[in-house]
Length: 287
Image 1 (cartoon, rainbow, N blue to C red):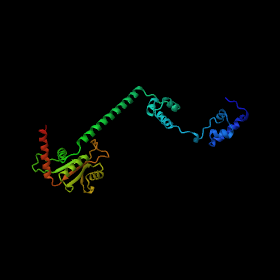
Image 2: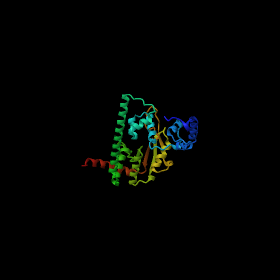
Image 3: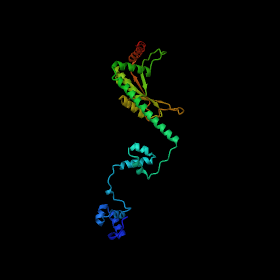
């Protein structure tokens, strides 16, 4: 340690002046020149414990990494995990976080559960990726439908979901009446009717929904989908709510079903039914 003699003999007085200048925002060099102190050891002792002003601090490229490392350590991350996450050395991490409390050690069974969960999450992500790729490949394989393909698709759709004459009904009402809760199915059905030359003026629409749902919102949704004014919809069919049933369709996305009626559709119904049996026979002879 440098002995304090000569002009530095009044050390305490000199220290008071040095600290005062430091608190005014002067740098070490400015203080050195102002007080004529050319001994770094003496200057260090004069300014001991006094932090430098903010403007003298040089930006450090690792400041962000340091802050992030401290955040992760406080979350209980190990040095290994922080190193993998930030790509910096363990020695730097240790220096940055050594004043922080060590994370509690998890028992082996908990660690095993976490590791298993991580592997399962990865597996689910892989499966979902494969699922989406399969769907997308199938979607692209379909391409653009010809009018004939759309006609056949609509016939199958109607026979599966639409209203049909009963064998015991001698009156043969032969009405085109279609109901579904899937907006995509409704859109496809309307496209099929358009292909058959059915004008929108011949169609009637009615919402069927549980009475506990938001009927007005549902009617506005379906009217927007089919392109009509909600006021033109027929009066909604409300299903009585049974509190003993465990209904699943109670989310905000629940909008009931839309029924589409076609006025004067007997001829179209016959075409549809005939085409359906043609598809059945065609499938029997397919090679």
